[in-house]
Image (cartoon, rainbow, N blue to C red; front, side):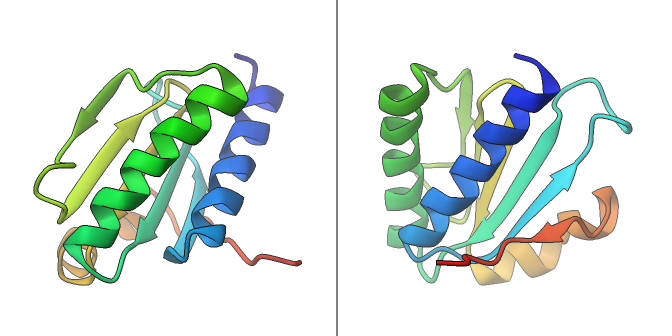
Length: 118
């Protein structure tokens, strides 16, 4: 997938998460800092149940819309910090406590806060 394609995927994921009521969605371009991905998406769920549901629904969305299966998923069962690897885009979904603790934005850069313009 080219950077333009990974940008489209990252933007579609942000929109999807927003539609599913995820909070504080941030898209960070990391291709100039690491070879593991082009973008990190960071979002929060209000509860472990919502984190779990966001992950399951996002996997289904990417599979249907982009024919893209998750390469690796971690932490989904616990619902406190889940990581979904879609190749060029890696999605981190936290509960509030874990997001404050890990503060990935501090490590990778502030990124762009996603604002749904519809």
